[in-house]
Image (cartoon, rainbow, N blue to C red; front, top):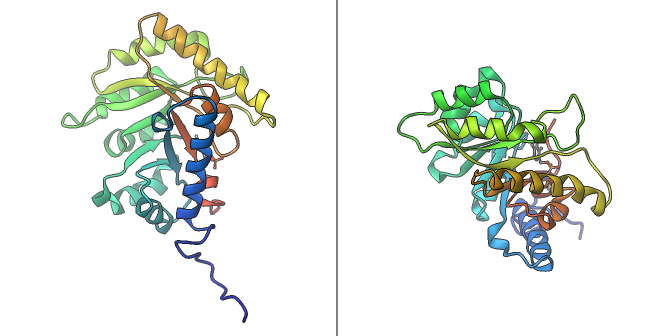
Length: 241
Ligand SMILES: *Cc1c(COP(=O)(O)O)cnc(C)c1O
């Protein structure tokens, strides 16, 4: 008998969001065990950019409640439609000035803060009755001139400025390194981010978050201390274009 052809895998199939999520959680558990870390201290952010709402619903049903988005116009209708489930929303993309108001009012976290001006706007626009917006400073650990993110040397100044803003709570550092293909090479920029965090904490900051690692390099990131991994493709499959 020919197998039924369906473009919507059932919830039990290995290609379903639930099946994929289970495998991503296994990846995290496995490397956590191998590196002697407690997997419950490693948070999975399911990066749902360019994914249809049905995929997010399937992830919620499978117990995933933290989502990452980086296209605001795409994200807002999803936030609206899933409001009853109260997931945690992470804005992981570049933050442009004209987007700060929606980010400050609709999201719980912003991961890619790299400018004082944006920090001030987000703080000013965070509603008074909300908890402060949790933020990470994006650090350019690759030293590529045209890349987003603050140079490691400039982090202390921006961290000090953010700490003084009432609408923001500085949680840690985030990085998005150039792709590297072997594990040793992948670990380098993550180790560098951990060093920058240590330097800042030695200078009196209290950063407890390292937002690093995606589908291709989450093991390397966890080995270097990631607390939040941002995984899209391995959770949801290929994105719609
Ligand atoms: C898209 C994206 C991710 C997820 O990438 P995958 O390779 O699909 O896991 C993580 N972080 C940021 C900032 C992204 O834009």
